[in-house]
Image (cartoon, rainbow, N blue to C red; front, side, top):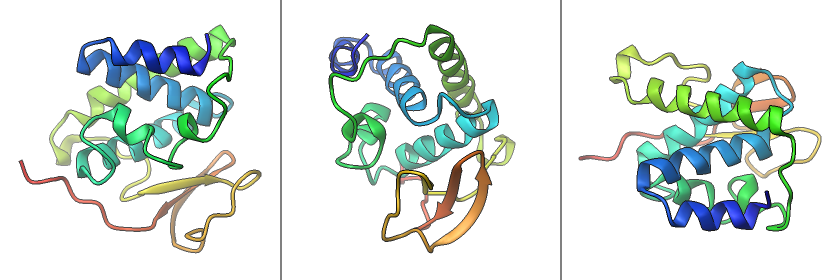
Length: 152
């Protein structure tokens, strides 16, 4: 499957299914070689951003916001061919969404307050010196800005 085809498919799905597909795609592109805990941490950052509303109103909008996550950074022709990794990230995405749907005090947070993450091998963003929440695998999770749930 190619990235552009997956994102097109998401545009044809129900919002809930599309969001799961967009989160799964992001986990594949950003963290398929990471531990489950590392994948959960990446999902948590995306879910926290979605909840804040600052990058969009849906997971697909959040992960396709300009230069924020891999779906807008890698080539649209990127092929996602590792079926074992795909199955793993889909499970992690769905589990992460279920966890994030819980009330704030009941959620299991891996990287509390993290609004951003970076992979040291490929990124040196201007915000890299922000407060470091955790390092998991080759990703460092940072609190660049405090994110609060949007007012409903």
